[in-house]
Amino acid sequence: MSYILNRLLSVALTLALISMITFVVTNILPGDVAMVIMGTQSNPEALAGLRENLGLNDPLIMQYGRWVGGMLTGDWGKSLVFKEAIGPLIAQKFVASGLIVVMSMTIALVCAIPLGVWAAVHQNKWQDNAASTTSLLGVSLPDFFWGIMLILLFARYLEWFPSSGFVHPADDFLGAVRHAFLPSLALGLGLMAHLTRMTRSTMTGILNQEFVRVARAKGLSERTVVWRYSLANAIGPVITVAGLQVGYLFGSIIVVESLFNFTGMGWLTYQALLNRDIPLIQSTVFVIAAVVMLTNLLVDLLYVVIDPRIRLN
Amino acid sequence: MAKLFTLKGIVGGSIVLLVLAIALFAPLVIPESYATQMDMRARLSGPTATHIFGTDQLGRDLFYRVTLGAQTSIMIAGTAVLISLVIGLPLGVISGYFGGWIDNVLMRLVDTLLAFPALLLALTISAVLGPNLTNTIIAIGIAFTPFLARIIRGEALRVAQMPYVEAARAAGTNDAAMILRHILPNIMPPIIVQATISLAFAILAEAGLSFLGLGTQPPDASWGLMIQASRDYLDIAPWTALVPGGAVAITVLGLNMFGDVLRDVLDPRAS
Image (cartoon, rainbow over all chains, first blue to last red; front, side, top):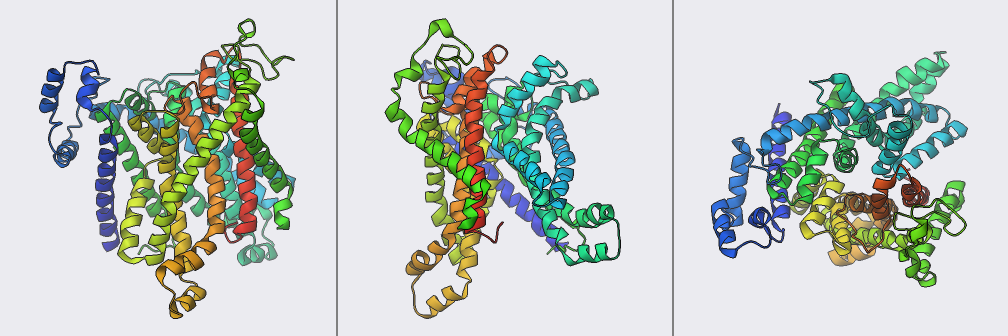
């Protein structure tokens, strides 16, 4: 109980720190919201008036307090580019990104675990080398380059999947999956390569352990030894690494969503950055960092469920 | 050392050397005008005898552009990793060596920064400072610092608990001498490995930033910028993306292979 209380306290502190960092980074901008709204050629008096109205002349600490206060009470401000309330805008885009994060993670895990196990079972043979080379190639290509290749192959030549756009799952679930498939694959390929390497190295360690030798000596089939006993021990670290990759995914979605014109959080963040929409930059950056932090926490807790030998303390 | 000369080590090392040589010497041998000269009759031409890698939408030779772009990409990635080392090394060493409240405060900050995906942090910093070559370097350098600081701290913590450090302390060695003489030399191998791998990530980050228009700006030519420019011509001229994309892939592949082998040699515990 005290562990959970401690963790929650630490989460609150980290969220506060995340909000401070976000606020500080976005406030070293040359120029401010008033300048973005009125443009650089605007009348200085009107600009000064707007600054006063928006409270930009107040000390930074007061502006920060107002921002955090607004976030806590559900008033996240208004986007300068989209002219919409930021809270609902983010909530809406989050669904889209959630879809491709889940899909790419699924693609990555479904392919990486068998491939990694296969490589570990055939350690130092051609199968291992083939899997290692493929995954090394996978981590060496930028996600957006995968994206370009996938668009060329699956959207232009084969015409199996649409090359851009987003459909809300509530409107047309199948359509949503079809639209999300190529961006998810682009993200999933790099991730898969990484997880294959991880699965292989964890499994190699486990296959050399005493209990595996005992299981084999007992005459258990190779399939039971590998898939039931060994993989059960390897899955924890692999899931942990997969969970920690959510941070990497949220970085990559900015590029991949922009390439596929997939209107999720990454696309929204990019639009905010490109148009210097400061209120929107602050909120999207804060939300992404908070989600990454909370996912890491969830992975920590999940680890205990997967591996009961681990005790929280 | 024999481990360095495995197939992987030789291939990886050769790629890294080749790319470094191109980045260093190509600008001395090839006049810049070769990369900017527009051959209007051969716009978006595929690979031919005159243009072995084809040309882009302005009829510029892709072979010369990709060779001269190597310098920009390598320079940005190298300087960025150097910046993250210059900030991350003292942070990590101080945190790991002294421990206590200094460690608590610094690592709390580093952990918080790690919640920001590196690419997001780099994009935000670059957008905030205004995208250009220098700011791209600064943005990637800062974005990579927390990760390196965390690893360096772990290494410093491990070494600080070694018996020889204790012995040196008992002999009256002061903190500064201890860090310089005993901690730093012993944490260097894993840091060199990490820096090599970070270099690969920095090249990918530069490509990503430039691809989004928030990195290197024209007329500077970098690989990411070339891929970005190819976006509108993918259907009719896929080589405009394949050439710079291939350059990024081969370089990063070489660095990753070399980094893997370097890890086997320098940091056997981790491999």
